[in-house]
Image (cartoon, rainbow, N blue to C red; front, side):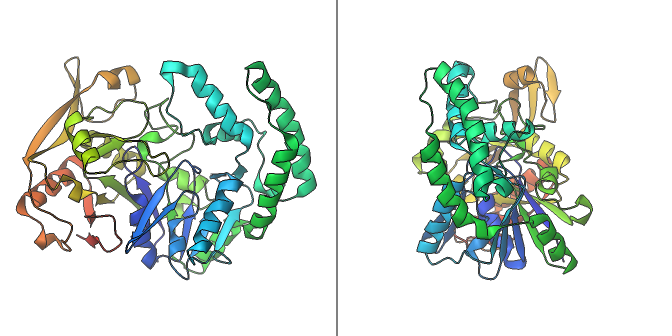
Length: 422
């Protein structure tokens, strides 16, 4: 029996969806614990591409239970659309899928608040996906949110909708924005509520029953460590706890029942939106974008790219208690002449071996690199450590050394079978 938390060790987009898909083979229950439809997990099965934003990617496997936990904020219209899309591809979504009754609902005013707040920030904008995630978490903390237990009860929802909408429309009108229409929202969201009602349950109880039955439970993180509201590059972060601890609070599962924390990281670094990224590098960004790589699954916008930042990964290992790591996108470096690893930062004569929390320092940090010869040969057909080019092995050993964690899974392409254990 193994209960595993999977986290991103960078700034999100590390390829967690694919690694979760691989780990699901030996799991019985897959749980999404935080974030919302701002996340995008991409899985390739053969030539078929699946992009999931809310439903755990374990849904692509038969006979697996998938759960959206209480820590997730859910856009009901997006979730219905996602379910319909899966059904259209003959993926079963029935008694294998559950939604926490205490998960919070993303409403139209949350998205409009997202737009308004970013507009007011001007040059200091965070780079949000404008999916209303931050404002939903804000209302949750303010104790004025709408939970699924309210959402699926028509009269209660109607009352809460009226109260919240009147309050927010005043703000929108004052800022020159259109007021949202009560009847339109009520109609759309009531239809979604009835479609989703059969899936809503006490997921905390469900998970504890699974634990007592000695089921293997996999906790699926969204985003990455350095987008964590507490431990990320604040304020350029998301609104939830993306680190391992967030998996417990976002599901109601006890930390003492977790057996392993596993990380996912790319062979290089990427980031979407604003915020510091010391190892960002135009050479590798242009190279990867030229290959058609590194465009967001949710937004489609090009990701910022850089050499692998071992300082950040080493910090993520410490914060999350990571014991092993899956490394993805190794094949993205196949044609590089030389490959670098950021092993430390330097700022005003001071060396930093871990990510500094002070943003003013972090933004001025210069990367200290170790350079390694590239392998200049395709790795996408490789299926074992022994088949890897010697220069690839040296690079991976250096990553293990500087990141202070063992690499146990390698991904050399987007497809499910382009993955192997090390």
